[in-house]
Length: 214
Image (cartoon, rainbow, N blue to C red; front, side, top):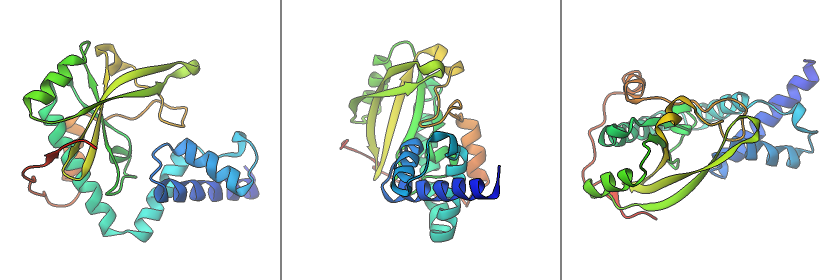
């Protein structure tokens, strides 16, 4: 890649990251398309990869938010682990911004759950006295395949949580990352615990955390 092309990709990656952060846009592919249109860049062949945009977003967060960003990420991952422990029977996997490190205090915690009976998730939430609302989430797979998965959304304090439910076999077949060509990264409970151990000291869990969904 020539220096000029590299410079163009980097500029577009940083503009896409800025848009994603300012507009709370978790779909980095959408942020990149918006950035390319704004900057007048050529077609997708010259665009940065999703991983490049994620790195640009993390770099901006380190530069402008510093310790506040690390603290926000710590809180999100801790709340994610609490939810994963409560939903352990569904083998939860953390995905999205809380996993890849691009999350901030406004981000949604995204979890994938696995069961052939989605109503079992609703029953579990009811047992936990967690009010939720139903939703659907469309996910992409290779060769252009798209599927609509049932989802549940609720609030943990001021943090939104979304549970996307897949069939049991979906544990071995992750969808593609939003706006990307690679399989979505996932992390189980043990991996999330290890990430927390590498961050700041433990934060005590908050009481009365769950609230009505918005």
